[in-house]
Image (cartoon, rainbow, N blue to C red; front, side, top):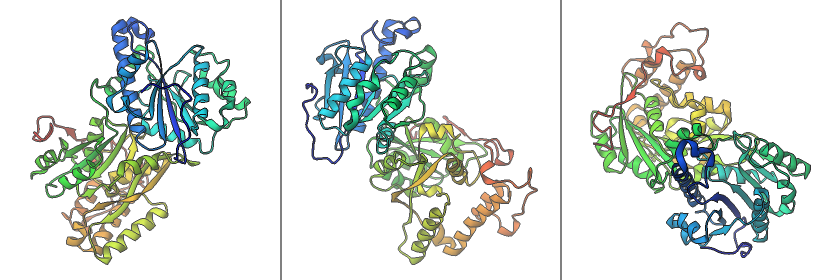
Length: 507
């Protein structure tokens, strides 16, 4: 729907937010001109069209919450051509409009967008381009949340510009001063904008630097993120399973409550119908083989195949709570003095006994005292943070604790309000006290340097706990957080076997 700027009015929502997308229409010879020598005019235009479609799909998901609206400020064509670029859900959306950018340099055009947002009663506004494929809806939410305590928020680009500039619009009467005299198209754009903000007395928040697509070497880097005609899911749920035919379908169903997500079940060479049950429930199924078929290898294999900007790791006997996607986004975008890197859900067991309630309270207390959540609490993390921290290690046991401790060193790991429900079968069959004590002994054994394979066998009940001996300490006391992915004690890394049963969509 095309409307004139400044025609809106303050709605009933307590807070209004707007994202303004500035982009040229994908016309051959007029877009991505620096890439034309490598791709040709048509190839450069096609790449720009794919990037624009990706960003519009991100905005489609972002604007599902009330109080959010989108402006597509275009150039290089008319309103009909701009509307044709919008995906169907946005084309007739009442909170989406197309506006021609108008005259002036980029600073003049952005200042008009911010001034129009202020006139429309918008509380927070962000200006973005179409050439940053890692600018996801989670990044948008993080940036706009930072405006709780700042006047301006910037997501820098690696080339010296920025991918996002956000402002609190009630104070944007100074937007012209913020954007005036910038050397657009140079590596000084971000630094100059921050200096203008400081001179104008505006408090500025700086988020993590990202890369955009401007050079030939950027093209191959962004290819895995672009699948023409295939929308990227909002979240990828990776479920590790082995001999879980009785439970895996419920785990898949709980993940599929959110229709804008993909579900990947990584089967650890099951001897039952786990792969078939997962595929029948609607998951993509792959099989992991090798000597180190543990959850760490399974989670890593699933993350490598995931396409979404948000990764959620689930055990096959655990069910995600209703509304899990929204809860995860709220946790990861929460402001604070220390950035939130990852999150998990509260722990709950599917057992009515008082022992289950005691264990749940003890787990909550342990987390409150600085402990790390277990794998059955469904860790979630942004893809770029997962990759930056090295992901899950291919270890026989405690892969979740290893990764959680690396996260703790990098930032905050917060617990969301909803609870993930885990089967209490292990406690019911092995005894509440005995299983809980065994789990604590496994953690203690890891701190003392006990070999991971022995700990895994101990927890699985294959050897008696008295047979666990403390191995000779390697380089002093081995600390759990320093176990390396390449540690020979962990066994050979597992691999995805595309020829194994269930390796491709359950076939």
